[in-house]
Amino acid sequence: MARINENYFNLQGNYLFAEIGKRVERFKAAHPDADVIKLGIGDVTRPLTPAVIASMHTAVDEMGEASSFRGYGPEQGYPFLREKIADVKYTRRGAAVDKDEIFISDGSKCDTGNILEIFGTDNKIAITDPVYPVYVDTNVMSGRSGPYKDGKYENITYIPCTIENNFVPELPKDKVDIIYLCYPNNPTGMVLNKSQLKKWVDYARENKAIILFDAAYEAYVREDDIPHTIYEIPGADEVAIEFNSFSKSAAFTGTRCAYTLIPKKVMAYSSSGEAHPLHPLWNRRHTTKFNGVSYIVQRAAEAALSEEGLKQTGEIIDYYMANAEIIKEGLKSVGIQAFGGVNSPYIWLKTPNGMTSWQFFDKLLNDVSIAGTPGAGFGRSGEGYFRLTAFGSRENTYTAVDRIKNKLKLK
Ligand code: PLP
Image 1 (cartoon, rainbow, N blue to C red):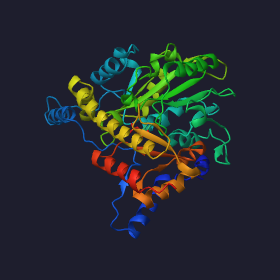
Image 2: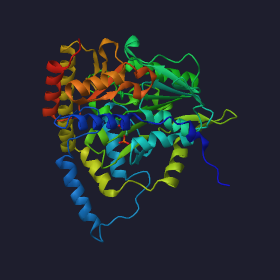
Image 3: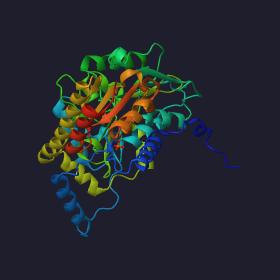
Image 4: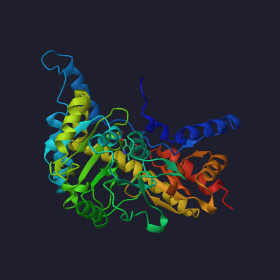
């Protein structure tokens, strides 16, 4: 008799984006002339840059010639890309890493989920709340979460990030083993400075814990004291695994390329208390279950990190960040408290007049035909908040802000 993984029964239906879609469709059916502006999406809209496209074309041509054709590549990624990432993303920032510590993959979503395979199921997990839902659901699937009760999983430690603590997570009172940190944060758009992040690195070192650091929005960091990588913090290379992706930095959400960095010094412990490096385990897992990102895409990613590529992607990020400023200023001008949007493409606002996240969703849609994302969809501590993104066009961003200023009825 084939048995099912019953942990899946514990998953809570992720109705967030389905429910948003349903409500928008219902609204459009009732108001066929309404021009709905979507500021809810967490997907980029500007296309791949010329440097990336040129490199992809060259790689396509290489694949069409017997002399330069490539079959299976190294599962960990081609050395040309791993070297480029080590140089541009780490060494230049004073965080020396070895290219062999970098694993190329087709996405940080899969990596942040798959990484759990190399950890025992009895680890105590901590997440910040609100949170990117993938971290929670993959722990549920693997049987670490315990049952769901009152909006929480019993075995997960939730660390609230709200206005009350200025969205800075406090160290857990109970002892945890694996900590997910995502900075710049999705959904709040907030960041940790170096001394705030150092507290977590120190906690992990003292407690032999591991930090899973998701840096998917690192390219949006603008301020000086905000780390681009956790390895800017001394000692992090003993306790942190870092995930990063070309999705949001170089418009690769549909092209797919990411990387995970596991320093060779990072250890986890066997039941007898013996320390074991995690790098060989992930290498084994990766080489067994993954057959590499396509050569064409890895050449594209390499080009995104060339001087020309960085300049071009930098211009796109500047474009989104100008949108973020426009949105944030617009919200403030009508008395709505808004956070994030300085080192991140996400703006996290406090719903006005004590509205719930979904009440504000309906109000924004009905009054001004704007669709955003209710904060409650990211966890209990997201209730009473709402996420807008800077990924729209400049024109739509201006129109949306104009509507918020002139047509949103807050009284
Ligand atoms: N991590 C965070 C925090 C994200 O918000 C996202 C996508 O929205 C991802 C990872 C996914 O990245 P990728 O496209 O590389 O799978």
